[in-house]
Amino acid sequence: MSQIFGPVPSRRLGFSLGVDVVPLKTCTYNCIYCQLERTTKKTLRRAEYVTAEVILEELRHVLSLGQQIDYITFSGSGEPTLNAKIGEMIRKIKEMTCIPVAVLTNGSLLYEREVREALSAADLVIPSLDAVSDEAFQRVNRPHGRLKIGTILKGLRIFREIFSGQLWLEIMFVKGINDASEEIERMRGVIGELRPEKIQLNTVIRPPAEVFAQPLTEEELSGIREQLGGNAEIIASFKRKDQSAYKADVEEAVLTLLRRRPVTLSDISEALGVHRNEVVKYLEVLEHDGKIASKIFGGKRYYQSA
Ligand code: SF4
Image (cartoon, rainbow, N blue to C red; front, side, top):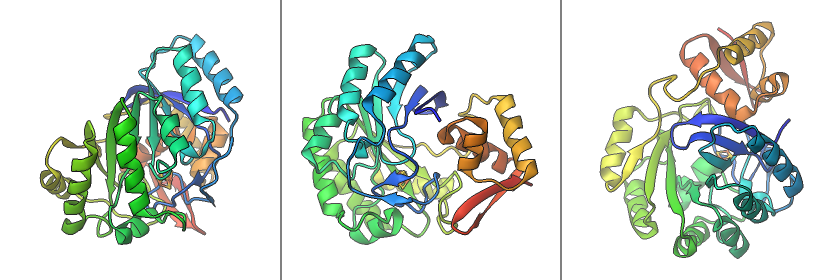
């Protein structure tokens, strides 16, 4: 499976070329809403899980195809800052092309100077921050045992001071988990300190790792936006197909596969040679249209024809 995927049309970043630098599912968190299944390797150990050479060589090839790419985006099968060479990769990409580089991160390692320095070479960093109290943090993100929300907030504050690029904050709300009014009030205070260029509010639209991770309604999310004020915007798409440059052949291939037997996201991705992050977009639309259904069995989500 290639480490580079797309370009995938995305609401926020236009045509985004994904760069996946950790194996599934390597993360510092095990978020209840994660669309990539439960975390199998919860770690704080930074390592060269995928080498910089592999990434840069693949990228060089993809860029030579001359496709429209608005952002080169580090995201993928877990937390990208766990790759110890992410800084070197970003710097080399910046030498290779003038396409801006974005990093989607959970921000949990920004308390490390090395991680801050690595990400400071990017043009856009989008950290998620789903909780500011320890209780909500534990409930929604189920972090590695050594992570403390206070340390993470400190890391974000220092990064804000040294980072000259764009900082967009993403907050994922889960019903009854991190949407209490007092939590949002405290978030408002933290946001005031971080001064992100954008605040993007999201909820559980794609099939989550846990069935109890339920979405907020559009009205509830709008209420939170009012409470947060400032430049908060809702990015959860309550309409379908509006963000996908939908390829009918991929949709048909997914449906054909699901007619045979129930399969997981990873099964589909491997069978079709399409990255998981692309596959989830198709599954989201098909499930909403009632063409497929999913259920969790033995800790894994299986998809099948409806
Ligand atoms: S949502 Fe992101 S931070 Fe949370 S477990 Fe999944 S990959 Fe990790």
